[in-house]
Image 1 (tube, rainbow, N blue to C red):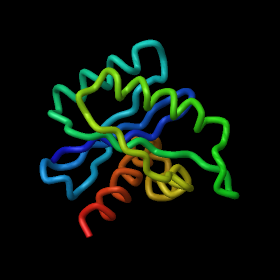
Image 2: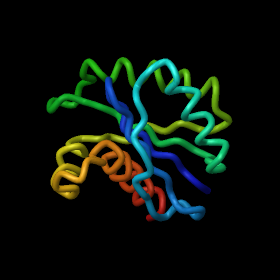
Image 3: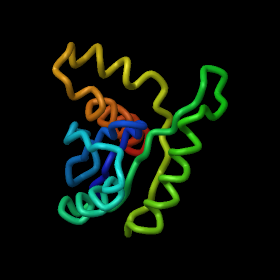
Image 4: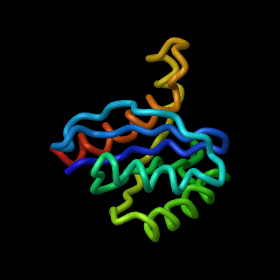
Length: 127
């Protein structure tokens, strides 16, 4: 099963994909969060033959939904209506900071964060 990982942000959205067996996660690209975002992701799912989507879930330090989580949940609903894929939520606590550390200024932080979210989900699923 092939997965798409998403690190949803207000300006940019990081995208990652898994291998065909759903074991490894790879940073793919960064999309602008604009009026074309949903359509771009639908097209990507079709071209990559994606079967499920893993969307980063954003919480505060106390474990409660933060402001962007409301937008993430709205986006999840739109994805579920437009894609022929299951959409799972995966906690994304500090993935952007971890990605910054790993990237050391390369500029693909959002895509790397998406890969970390996807890897976290795949590791749990494949245990």
